[in-house]
Image (cartoon, rainbow, N blue to C red; front, side):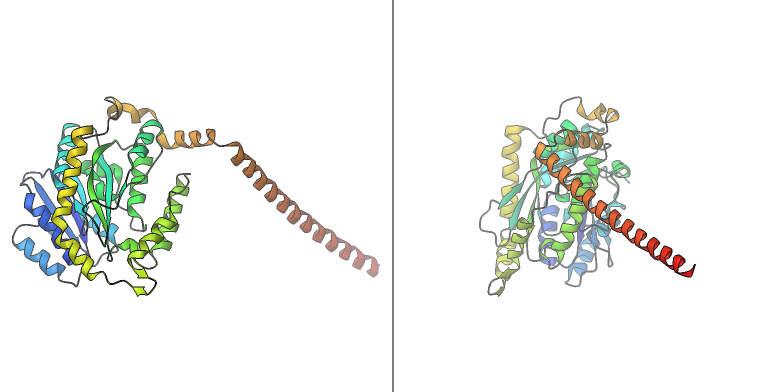
Length: 367
């Protein structure tokens, strides 16, 4: 059987109405040299029956059923079954520019030394008030800094496509992390072994909706802990913006109680094709003006990584940039710790001396 060019890997659980829109959009332009693998994590909202029907009709190449241990586990299950040259990650409630994804796959095919491609990302938030998304997440500046000094950075899994043979370098998704895209992006860019290209367009628009994991109760605490842990590992200041995530909880709550988004969700789903067209038109304009890929230098990808350790260099770079104020604060903290140690040490010695005096007194009394 001929090897597909692209394997689309999609994970889902109980998002039938969103899932239907994403798959309908994909099937409209699906090519014969593409496959789609769907991993359902135990849906009970009709998604499984819908997906089985699609598989029977030959629209889905592989359906993986059964409860999983979260999105990372579901993605790993599907990714390990992929046969394509390139693996593109999809989610069940977002918007994708499949024409741009295919152009990036052609680019990767022309440049076999590149392991992966990623891009910036737009974000909608339900209720949607316009065709243009509410905000854009830009990582191109971080990418250029990574090119310059190897400083690791994160980006969303929605805008990532990997060469399948490079998964041995990139690894699988971390099933123990609540922020799997942060974890994966930092591992890729912090390893010193991955050659990453950056697309000038946006491969996807994230849709923040009432079913999104990032607006579920209790998720914020896990995000804080996991993001800070990841950034501590790389000796970096956390990007975590608590106000930004707290603001997203507006989608769940209101002063008078829980918001009913049913009508807003229905309106968004009805307008899904127009939002997809907006993304495609935006990308066409950007790429016409700036080109498909961000210029990283003709000689960057084939050879630069063999001769450097970007994470180590970045740590040295950080230390060199330490400000005088930071050094003063660090000195004060060391002084405080030393004073505390002296106090403990003195207290311990005082107790030892008192004990010795008691023993000496008892000996004297006995004699």
